[in-house]
Image (cartoon, rainbow, N blue to C red; front, top):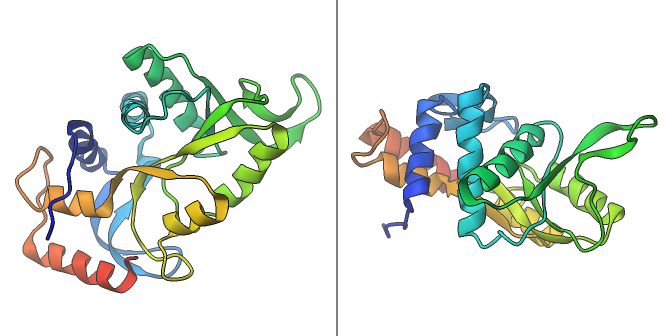
Length: 227
């Protein structure tokens, strides 16, 4: 199998996923009913240390992906709210790049600052990066992209997610590929499941090395559900 290139921050990110308990291996069932040998739970980024570190990885990936001309980091409610804040903070603390952050409300507020957006006001000409945890069915993106376009004439620079599971969506394409095609916006995963398996199948910086049985189970799963 061809070896995938991994940058230092991507290796450290996989270490971080394992260390924080956000990436686990065993027997799980996804919302779609698939029995999967691995699970990504970004709900485990639930304290100050983890969310601060997470923001640094998102910021590094934004810089590496050439998205550093963006003017707004947008986080769809609810999981995107801490993501856009910590990413914006990390861009400034790590790269001295001062970028605004915004997120949406689930309900319109009719008093005070009002509206459906909290944070920096989104205006014509803004270059927006959307931050998400994972893309499963692309439902959030299908709501957020038209929402942003309804607010102002923005340029959608891309979507940054933590992990691409590289699994089929409703057809033969992956959920990420489907989202890219239907929304016309590029998705930039920090790592994919293929990066993770390659890295954890050899001696690595985390506390976990995948044994042969687990490697085979993941390979069989991706043979069935992988795009």
